[in-house]
Length: 213
Length: 213
DNA sequence: GTCTATATTAAGATAGAC
DNA sequence: GTCTATCTTAATATAGAC
Image 1: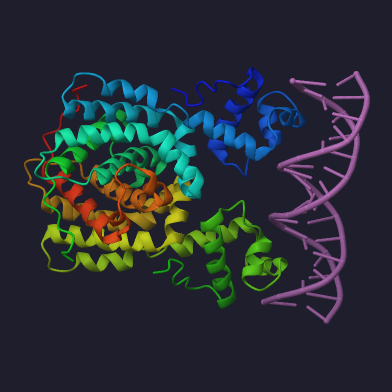
Image 2: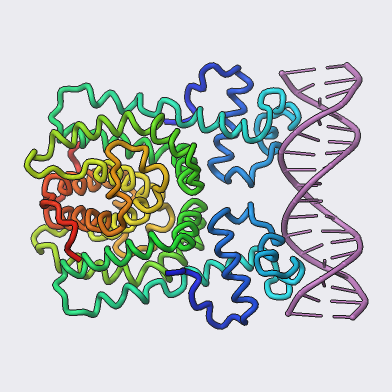
């Protein structure tokens, strides 16, 4: 449930520092959080942090590593089962929705990274964090769609990411948008809706028609 | 094309300050931009800013007002035409895609606001910025879908927002994700794909089935 | 309206004792 | 490994001259 999971190969104190820092950075951002804030959350003084991390940037890097590492593990289980492809897609979206809606730290830090759009970190996120799930998702999608249609699987995959991330980042804005109801607070309902949209988008995709402005 | 449009009822100097501040805040964020940075961009000294705005927060508020005010105007034109509903949806998504992909300032500030998730500002964004387009979009969607199916229009609207925003915020990450091709850099192609996904999601939506975990 | 000079605060980081 | 004390820098903001 919590993202700052097994920060393996980190000493216990460093691990605690990273956990606290992750929470604070996710909530308020890199710039608003001072080394003193992090130290206070760990019940130590600021200079002690520098025994474990050379500077604030290094600590932030360690946070990203810890939070984003092995995100694939939980969801990967779905792929090895013997469900039909469509049901696999259903389960992957449901599990991802629960994960991303409950893991505030993961979601905020990802959103922040997309804001920064730093090329190196984007590459890290894409290849180390997302790639595995994406490739397996791609396989499922290609099983679902009839060969004749050949939809754009890159677009489908990124749309899954976008819908999952956006719907659970919408937060307080949702209630003020037209048609909002109580059921839109329900994670499983939103997952269901996302599943249907992706599925129909993949299954009923018309032949490509790029030039029809 | 640029977001910091008619900051009407602002004196010329204040208007220039807001424009420069908008660009800087969008790029680097509130905390990383100092009053000195803004002043330098305006070719004045920092204390002069305080003649126009009482403090940094007030200036930021003015920026949000200026950037987010009257976003609806451009897109609203589509709604009054005599196209078929489906073609209206197509055009709205295409124009919105072009707008949101080209207006870096608008997109970054919106992304930043969703990160902060401040209730008051979320209400402002939803009701003053988004509501008009959303209501008209809702009308189009209800014309498209067969009455018998009755899909969730709130979900459909927020999905349009999410897909538009996410696909153009993905930036440098996209190229590192599976299946990326050159055509995924093309705004009109992405708009086309988004249109198909929303349309099929609305048209082919199955009867609601909320309890089928 | 804009400037120079400055007050105030708080940040990142280091030195060196324990 | 953690601490106290401190250095250095840079931020917001104000006072008051022009």
